Image 1 (cartoon, helix red, strand yellow):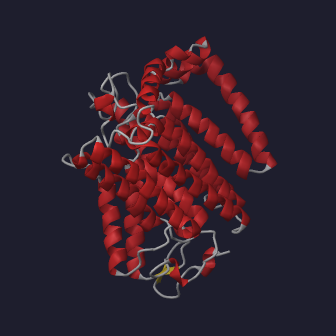
Image 2 (cartoon, rainbow, N blue to C red):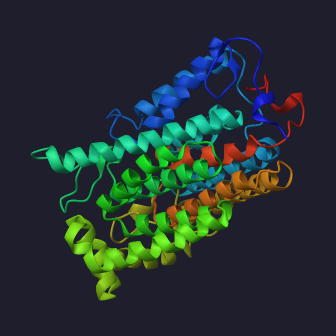
Image 3 (tube, rainbow, N blue to C red):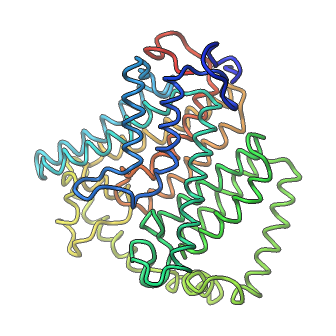
Amino acid sequence: MRPASAQSVSFGKPTNGIGYLPSVDMAALYFLMAAVALAPMNYLRVDFVYFTLSDFFFVLAGFVMLAAGQLPVKIFGPASGFWYSSFLFFTGGLTIGSLINGDPTELLTVFVQYFFSLIVLPILIGNRSFDQIVLLMKAFIIGMGIVVLFGIYAINFMEDPTHRFVSANGRMLSLVERANECALMLAMAIVFLLSLILQKQSSRIWGLIGLPILFYGVILTGSNSGLIVTIVGTVAIILSSGSPRHVVTLIVGTLIAVLVVLNFGELFLPEVFRERVLNAVLAGDISQAGTFSDRLFLLQEAFEVSRGTLLIGLGANQYSLASEQGIVVHSAYLLTLSEGGLISLLGMVGFILASIYLAWMAISVGRSPSVGALTIVAMLMYVVLLAGATTFYARFWNVPFVLAIALSVSRLPVFGPTNTLRRMS
């Protein structure tokens, strides 16, 4: 196993928790920390192309690493080849569909975005030490905390907040600009913070400060899917990584929370949460829980469309043209099957299988069950997230997923000097 203390180099200035790094490595790490913290802030982007402020810092980190000859060849250790193959399958299906049925111009746009998210991000993040990945995870948690605090400010103190920050029915969109996506990223941040506390990589004080803020953010989004994923992820990470005392605390805390919400929730919960979530639970009527019926109709339509695209898809960004409603279905799996056929769907499944394999390697070879558990829980959450997403090339989707995989990779043995052009510290 590669212990963190054995991964630092012996020159440069000392840093907190990451050993000694030369100035070029520190510059790249600082750029990556900024990029990861800004990744959820979708609002900070240019208008003419999808390029965010986070992407700018990722590019800066890439230039620094390229100039120093430090870009990894094996981005995810022993699963690198499988990851690259999955990407070729995923984009290959879209390419075939676009050349036969779709628009090559749209293909180029989509390919560049997915290449940045699924290849460039793992190259920049995927081969770093355990301590550096932990530091980047903390940057992501802080970024989500800022998103919540800004959302609270927009809801309570802006006289007429733009609908890019607060929806017409009062749901918090904040800098993510999307309610459900904001809630789902908050769920990932909550699981990250809980896992770091259980692994003793973060102080309990930060949990007492951060967890209430992040949980309150989920409530402000009024997202049913976000709340469900948050609860499932929280329970899963405590059961897989916590002690019996943590499990008992979870059970008692859950019972108290349920009783308080059901009996007194109308007195203190935000109106948007009461209308979209609590009332549906109390009434036992799922039709009151947002736009469930509308999405179900779109899913049924997508099933019909995908029956004719098993071999050759419609092509990148072509689904809305085939839909009678002119709306993209909110299921990345069905959208991928419709636009890229089975080839693209196999590539998509390959990304998930690669993460499972690396998590298992971290548990069995790296002797790090808590790390492997986090990767598995994050992957399962990601599987659920994609069931309600459309395209998933936005960096706020992939940054937490890549971090969860990279954490398991950081606990694997070094398989030899061919892992990288120059081994990252």
